[in-house]
Image 1 (cartoon, rainbow, N blue to C red):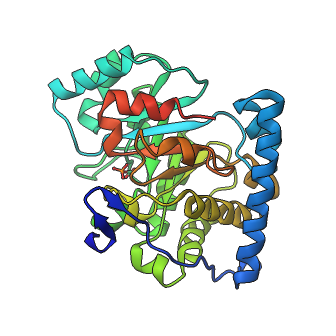
Image 2 (cartoon, rainbow, N blue to C red):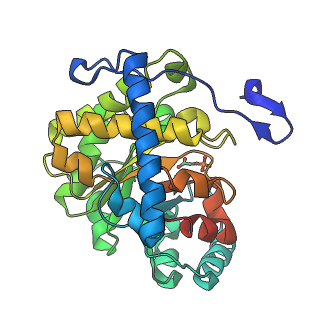
Length: 314
Ligand code: PGA
């Protein structure tokens, strides 16, 4: 990603058009993009009015397209930590002051789930980072959603791009995992997102919508799903999507949901942004109308940064 480094610590997100191959949703063009831009402008105006009328909370309720429910922040600890470092992180999180009414879900590595459960207090909830596609059995090294449920854990992540890329999880496998976890009553953060090449060749929305289409083929009730839009080029790179890029993609995802699933699911869906979110960039991202939360990797390993990100909730 050094191509985007302008100078030490200064990074820019890659430019790239959004497109989808779905004819119902196709945004051929600049016409569509400029309509999104003017939509954003009117949203901004409504936000200003809403702020004047009742503060930050009013903003989310004043706007037309937004997820329903609380802002939701996930901490994806990935394959990091030791018993000692996790104890320290949990102690920092417990000591932090969360000033906002939001949902917060931390996803430790499997082997530290019990430790985390025993020591992480409210409002923090706990998620698995992954589950198997179905019930348990002869699947060496895997963890089933049944086991997560058995532990009393209510959440799992599915489809993280690292699992898609490194473990060969296809859209269909991710959809199967998601459907099975939902069938047991778990809540699922489904991750989607495009590569740098896909953004640059204009297929961002086509990729994201294909990932969601696989889910739509096997899931009918979306009420326990949260979507995490995580552009791969932004994950762990320090190259965060610009607020405009994130907002435009989130709005495109919501439009696709409205057409392909239902307007109701689209308007209720919480869509998190993930990819190099940190304590310094969270506020401006959180203020985007279609950003309903974050999925945070690196910065979730630092208690104070993660608390700051939680407190950016609008
Ligand atoms: P990052 O990771 O915040 O370190 O970019 C995000 C994620 O992978 O969920």
